Length: 226
Image 1 (cartoon, rainbow, N blue to C red):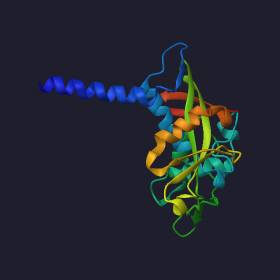
Image 2: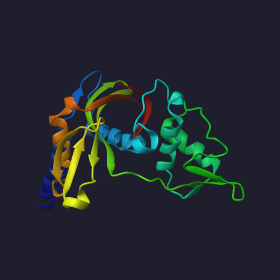
Image 3: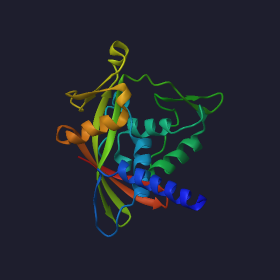
Image 4: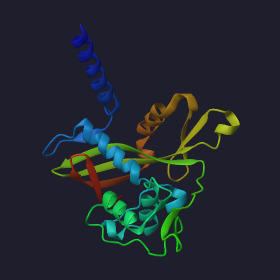
């Protein structure tokens, strides 16, 4: 009986995972993209997807990671730093972790706007970032697997929470041109938001992100195109 219950639980978990990603179009090439890879891709993209008000674009386009906008690059580093203070070596190591060994840019010794340098401690300190009430978000749309490189198309959108304090529940869904596409009650959650985005995908901006599967559970960004 216990074994039967365990099997049922496992099947339910698998079913939930399949339902969660059923709307993502997977193009078959050399191999199928599995649910674990999709989860890893989404996890990695969440790490590097920034805030428009800080870096102008949540994810800029570039042909080579070393040519990417520097404000975005170092803001990604800051976003993924767990400690308040960090050494120069730790910054560089975090850059390699996120962008791979092909990343050759060096962090400015004098620091940046968001990672300030203290000469006395010889440490860099993450400064507070003021964010607006627009949450920069993305949704996986298509994944094309080509050996160890994944072409991932994402849909970009904004969740406007400025009405929450007034109505207590309204979230406005916008595209990057600030056009209102729909609205949901706060209680309806992310599932309803994603449903609106998918049903209106032609009204949102899209980008193609090329990721390399460097390790079993890690992805590294290669380039981003419109």
